[in-house]
Length: 118
Image 1 (cartoon, rainbow, N blue to C red):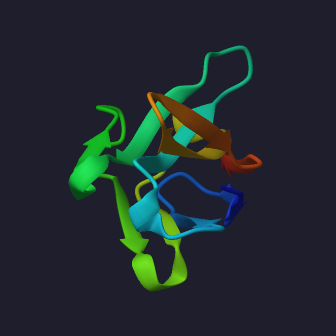
Image 2 (image 1 turned 45 degrees about the horizontal axis):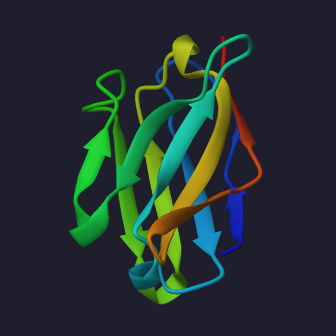
C-alpha cells in the first residue's frame, strides 16, 4: 500500500488542523491505519489509529481534542486536531498495517509537519 499524507501547517495554540491520509487500496483491506507523531529528539508515538473491526485507539495526551475518522469511498483517514497545544508540535506520520500470511507489512507515509506556536 502507498500512503499520501497532507494537511500539516502552522497554527496558534487553541487552533485546529485536519490531516488527511489517502491509501492506494481499500481501507477494508488494511488491518490497522492511523497516525503517529515524532518530535525532535523523541521517539515516534501513537496518536490515533483505527484497528481491526473499526475500533479506535487514542493516546491519552490527545483524547478529547483529536478525532480520527475515515471515508471508505475515498480510501482516506482523517485526523481532526482541535485545541492544539505547543506540545503537539511534531512531524505526523500516517501508518498502515496489512496482514500478509503469518506476518504484517507496515507502511509509513511521508511526514507532515504540524507547528503550534504563538
